[in-house]
Amino acid sequence: MNVEDKFVSISALLCEPTRARMLWGLLDGRAYTASELSIVADTSPTSASNHLSKLLEAAIVKVEIQGRHRYYSFSNSEVAYAVEGLANLAKNSITESVKKEPKNNGVKYCRTCYDHLAGFVGVKIVETLETKGYLLKSKNIYLVSEKGWEWFLLLNILKEDFINNRRPITRQCLDWSERRPHLAGQLGAEFLKKMLQRKWFKKVEFSRELVITSKGRQELYELLGVAIQ
Image 1 (spheres, rainbow, N blue to C red):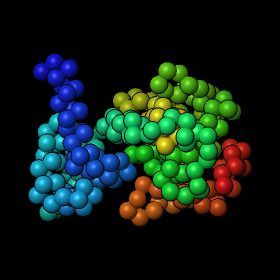
Image 2 (image 1 turned 90 degrees about the horizontal axis):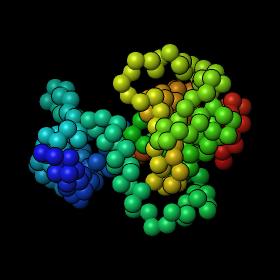
Image 3 (image 1 turned 90 degrees about the vertical axis):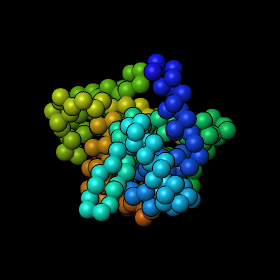
Image 4 (image 1 turned 120 degrees about the vertical axis):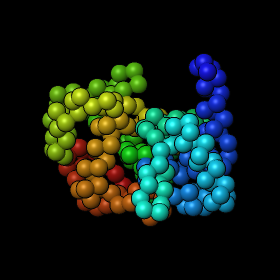
């Protein structure tokens, strides 16, 4: 099968309505059973299992077996980027979210995008890192300056921990609600992990939404000079 045929096949798998809803549900980075994903997609568990079998065969999802349960998740971060990228096509106006700030709650304001921070808050933090010269845009990635690594060290994120890892250190992931990039890749994942450990954000149950805490607002201002309402 040539590249064009593979593209057509993968596109058909991703864009079928039931499978698309399940993939959207998996975008929070967690693993779910077929029964749980059937609720997300509003279909029967049997139908969900059939759809997941097709996604599994195409290596779009992977499965982990624990006892009697089978847990499905994205096979790799590239799938998450593809789903997030498709979401950008759903926006009718490119300038709509840029012209006005969203309300300070909800998934458009602050959320996870697979394993990294997204939404208005995620974009604002990254743009502040750029303004300070910690991150530098280069094609579809970010270069981390030496003073950038010095700043990340404040969060116990070490440059040497990213050596010899097959996953890209950084990536610009176009935010579907902001239409501006946020930080993805290995550094983006580790950054969110550290922020959650420091209790800067709280997860909302059964949602990708994150709630920024008063501690998070205070320390982001103290360490980065970014004010988030």
